[in-house]
Each structure stands twice: as C-alpha cells, then as structure tokens.
Length: 395
Image 1 (cartoon, rainbow, N blue to C red):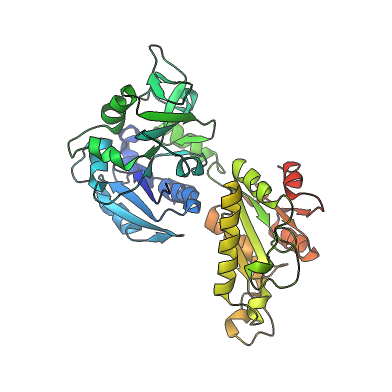
Image 2: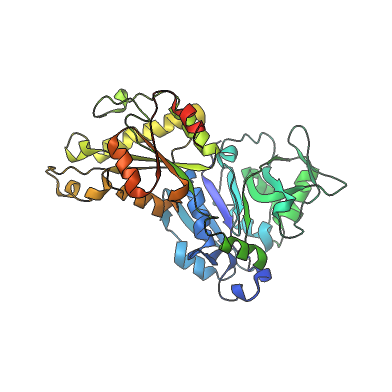
C-alpha cells in the first residue's frame, strides 16, 4: 500500500537542553544557521509524501508561522495543534480523522538516515507497526526499549536481558493503530507499542545507518562541531549519453532508451546514501522544439520506470532551457545555467544542502568536464561499459 503521509512529532520542550529551549522549541534549534527541523525536512522531501503533519504543542505558534500550509518540493506541510501535552500517543490521536491509510512517523529531534522506501514498500500484513532499530551505542541516554530482540520472522519481542538494539524513532503504522489510541495522555512507546509487541503485532528491522540525536547538550554540541554532519553527498549525472542513448533531441519518451547499467547505478547510489541529481542542457525548449511540460512528462516517465524496475530514485532534475537565438525572452536568460556554466550545480547544492567537495559528476562531453571544473566537483567521463560498474569503482 502506497504511503502518502508522514507525521513528525515536534511537541516536546526538550528540558534536557536547559535554557536553550526557553524560547526556541527543540526541533527549531539552529545548526549551521538553519533549524534542525529544516535539515530533517530537507532529508525527506525526496520521498514525495503528499502531506507532512507536524504535531505541535510547546511554542506551537512558531511552527505554524514557519511551516503551516507551506509546500516543500511536492509535500504540503500541515501543522496540527495537539492542545495540552498528552504524550506521543495522545498527540497522535489528533490525526485519527485526517489519515486513512498507512503512514510513517518520525521524531522531530532525531534523524535516522535510513532509506524510507523500505517502509513505503513494506507489506505489514496483519501487523500494526514496523519499528526501525539502531544500535544502543548511538544513544546518549537510557532510552526505552533497551531490552528489545528480533525473532527469525522479524517479530519484535522483549528480552529478559538488556540488548544492544534500540528504537530508532522511525515507524510505519497501519491505519488501524488509531483503534488503540485515545485522547488521553499516553506514551506511544511505553503504553501503546509495548502492549502491541507483547501481542506479537509489531515487526522490526535493524539498520546500521547514521543516527543523529539533539536531545542533550553533549549531542547537540557534537553535531554543531561536525560542520558537514547534516550535508548530503550527491552523484550528478548528465542525461543524454549517460542515462539514455544520445540520438539527437529526445522529443518524446518513445525515443528514450536507457543505457546499460544506469538503473542499477542509481539504485547503488541510493543505497550508498548519495543523492542522485540529473543536470542536463535542454536547448530544445529554447528552440521551440519541446515544451517544458513535454520535458516534465519525459522525466516523470523516466523516474517511474527506474523506480518500478529497481526501487531506485532520482532525487531531482535540473535543466537549462537557454538558447541564445530563442524567440522567447525567458529562454535567453540564465546563461550560466547551461553547461559549461555552473548555475545548475549552485542551485542543486543550495536546495539539497550538498557538500560539493564530497560529490561527483559523470558526463560525456567536454562541456560537462568544464562545468565540473567551474563547480569544483570531481568529474568522470562516462565509460563505454556499464554505468553501474563504473560507479561501483568510484564510490
């Protein structure tokens, strides 16, 4: 079942952070001049949730002022006032009439760098929840569920002894979870999930991915000192000649032919936690051979085919419509976007918080190489063999 909704818990005050949260709610504490929540949203927009619900309580007006009814990428942000603090379980009750499908829930003060497609594509069967587990060493405190254990069929249970598994604060819920929640003050973890685990209605998976927690002064300072801790790495790809066979202007998807190993390469980059960004010159639009709407349809079908075949994701596509002789004024602007200019790379880095020095670009033209030089990004010419094999030799 497709997952359209993401819920982020942002209602807590964060008392362990002391005076820092007297004025600012914990998820809005700035790291690298940007609220932590902003970093978190930047990490998850690629999954194209239709709606992202922020469950607010402490200093809720700040969340409403910053995010309510705003769109980030393709996701609409909706702030929900949970009223008087009712714990993580009571807060979730506020969404009972708003969500009618399975949904994902995450904490607003942690970031667990897993591939959320694992949850989006997960079949819960008769289970009511899936919990993503991490290693206890990642936690700064004696968090709940330190005695978790996984059975052979991924059923979650409790051990009589302490284990090294810890709840990572990322969940997939069956919509029927609302049958077990009311508007009374309850903990989602201690009161609701605890009982469901005992009833063997919860499954889990372990992920050995980066886990960030800003719940204490020590952890917060550690993250602030790691200037690039929340930045993304990216694999930039030219399109024609790298992703698809170069046969002149591609004016419809009927002429689009994937090159060998491309889809597998994109999946590999996803698994290695690299963003996949396409940067392509499309002067056919400036030449009035193709409309931007037509190009969008081509790219939409390209992305859907990649996801259908390999559960792989192109995170974003930047294209230049510039053509110096265009009859349409707007297509004679933004010359620096067209490679060998670096405009598309600058825009991508700003939008996705990309560490260019840790990223790569694969192209097939000398203009691609020059664009890489201008962008100060490591460049590789596309080899004749499989892009998957080439990328595996690089990252």
